[in-house]
Image (cartoon, rainbow, N blue to C red; front, side):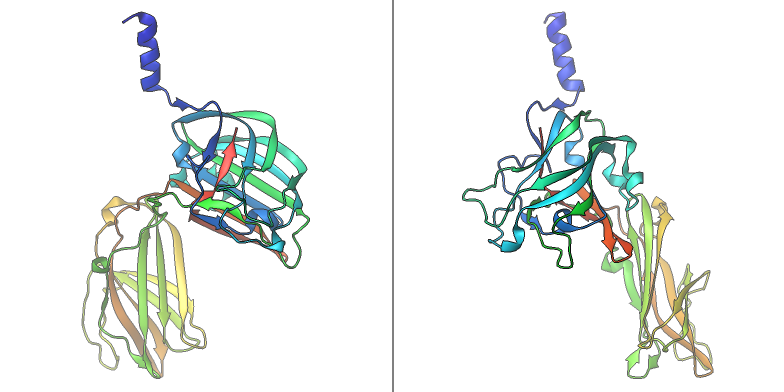
Length: 353
């Protein structure tokens, strides 16, 4: 083997694959129809920021001079899917899907590249489905600045929409081809039934038992604790206690046994008129030792001069989730505010060339 051929071999083994023509996100859908559609966000919402992060394009190097989308080939004809104009900006960046967040700027690794400065683009008439499947990529936006994805990180594309000719009170839909990569995975994992079991029965307030649920979701990089109650005393302050053991002891005058050693106190706020309340604590620091480690929770509320207790819950964090290959987050204007959504799995089928 010559020195030159050895260099070529090593380059092939050590460097990411290089795609010279066309690449799609999710990867591999140039001539394959996506599994479903995404019906409106990128076609009609104002103040939209849409980010799609693609781990299937890690280790793939490709240049990009344009971005393009196509109509879902299965969605039936609809006169709402007419042509429209949108004022957009487009950014490309490196990212890490395992650290996806609804804070858009936190999803960049390094500095994003503004490949399309703010301008008006024309989206095609997608009233009718294509005669052949898949549809052509006929919604094309050329870049002002060429871009090369280096393949070291996951690939992020972002569209910001500031004007839209169809963004009125009706928010007319627009059917993009879309795909959930299989196995899609998840951004969080709930514990199994064996790691989340109810202990005892809560006090009966009215016609139903005071019921408490606790779920510790594992996001692989953080935990999220979700607690809720139903059929609690109405309009009452609700306190959740979390402990390290199930005491299972009666208290004179109380209508349920105490099912936790009350190591930690977490207020859930005030129940509504039906006796319901929910509390979520996000971004709890990840600690692998919590996976499968049993904890115990129970909620308390004042009632008729005494204390009403819910059932207890034995809970633990489940195993790390199997992260998906493609994910997305987005936000857009609703009335005078902004709604943020995600992270969600799957993505709009998008071509870069």
